[in-house]
Length: 204
Image: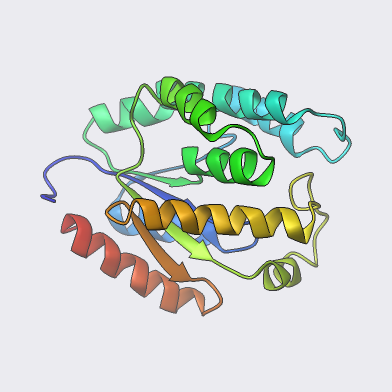
């Protein structure tokens, strides 16, 4: 692809895989807008509090999915669309594919319905490139051991196994859009592979 238009690049993976670190580094190297889902706007931050609060044990999967889609619609309107329209690259810690992985493969909700609702929320603007940081759940939990876990991080190993399989399935189905990297390596090694992937894909 030519590099003459702004790109939307998303990092995906389970909790503890290093998405935030790599998104921050890539955004800095590209001079891109750095954002996240959920919580990339002031309204979204309030939605995120509900979603991640471990006290909310009775939140239904459908309600969870719709709250996240609402956050995504606000994020598109307030952050994503204006940045791209201004000619700026956007690097995001998570994207629509997290909804498909977590609420679809993880919670067992209808995948076509999730795609339809989230495509509406995005106004059809899906990421140009998805970088999946693939990591074993046990290692991810070791990385998170020193902090208090949120509502998602407290989920079972089986839940995260379904999510990881979902991410890999989507990556295999859309090879032109995804790059899968081993996230068990050092931060610098992963960053080097991320930069190589972005150069090869977009010439950036």
